[in-house]
Structure formats: C-alpha cells, structure tokens
Length: 257
Image (cartoon, rainbow, N blue to C red; front, side, top):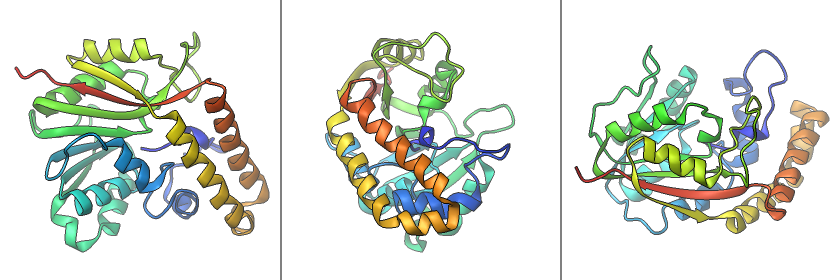
C-alpha cells in the first residue's frame, strides 16, 4: 500500500502472490511493497503527532509499514487487505515484541471493513487507493470507523486531468475529484501536500538499488522482467519530472460531531 501500478499481470494469476514476495523485498525492502522505504513513512506523518494512536492501515501488503509504526511510534495497528494470504504472511513475519499491537484482516463477505464504528484515531493508506474505483463507498466506511475528529491520511497519485476511460490499472483522480469524493464521504478540512520532489528522490534511490540487484533478479526472474521493472520506474521519473502525475499527501478530518 504500495505502488502496485509498477507491476503488470503477466498471467491469470495476480502478480500479488506469495511466490513474488522475494522480488518485492529485493526491490522495496524487507516486508515492503512500497517505494521510499521507511523514510517515506516518516515523511508521510512528519507534521502529525501519531505516537500511541489506534490506527487502521488500508492495504497493509506484507505488513512492513504497520510493523514500523507499531515499533517506532508505539501505535496499535489494524490492517485490512483483499488478499487472504497477506493476513497469514503479516502475522507470521511480525516481530514478536509488537504482535499484541497488531490485528490483520480481509474485508468481510460483503466487501466491508470488519471493524467497529469509531474504533480508530487515524486511518492511513500509502500508494493503494489509485486502484479503487468506488472510493466514495470505501471512504464512507473509513469515516464510520474513525472517532470524531479522527484523521484520514493518504499518499496517492494525483493527475493534472482525469482520464475519460478509467479501464486501465490506475484511476486518474485530479485534486478536485479527490476532494469532492472525500467531502461526499463526510470529511472536512481536506488538504493536499505535493511530495513529488521527495518522491522523485525515492525512485532514483530505488533505481540505484536495482542496478546492484540486476544480476540476481535476472537470474531468478528473467532479464525481461528486470527490464520491465526498470523501464516502468524510469517512466515514473519522467512522469514526475514533466508533471504528468504528482505524489500527494492528502489529509482529511472527520467532523467532531
């Protein structure tokens, strides 16, 4: 929760499967599927006081961000995912000393978040929501799970203009469309922080790491896949540099009541 757009499905099986975990970790770091490693997590919350809060992670992936926040900010983290294997994986790989602070689950059989109303001080999602087409339904559920005055913190892509055909892997939200859907879901005090310059540095650092791993990735997964991953991240750099997409940190607040 995580930059999933940088991988394409090459077969009927989702690329987000257990067999690809070692590839994700080679590219992004241990227990991560997210550009920027933990530096980007710190920056996501850099102007917020989050120590000791109860949080919900939308799209926790391999659990790395939840582990980091639990250990370094003494937070209690619940996580929600669409992939059942990720729940098992996250529990199995969580450091033992923070296990009591963690709870991972999948959506219920009706696609709803399985946590009680007003359970969380903060809900966050990093690099996942660009795949969600019906944001309003999800955001209404997020609003319900938040305590009054709770915060929704998002890192996501924002585009200069929407795309008429949203059948591709990404939903191309503009700042205006994102703000509107958050307002429709009951949030106020919505703000956008353009983190593209910082994110550009994260991608450049990732490419430097990829250079070091070129041989091992090529041997295990094939040179073609390495080239695909490399080219996709190079394209991402160009998109950021030419303002074709922006990495935004979005804050939205649930009204006090």
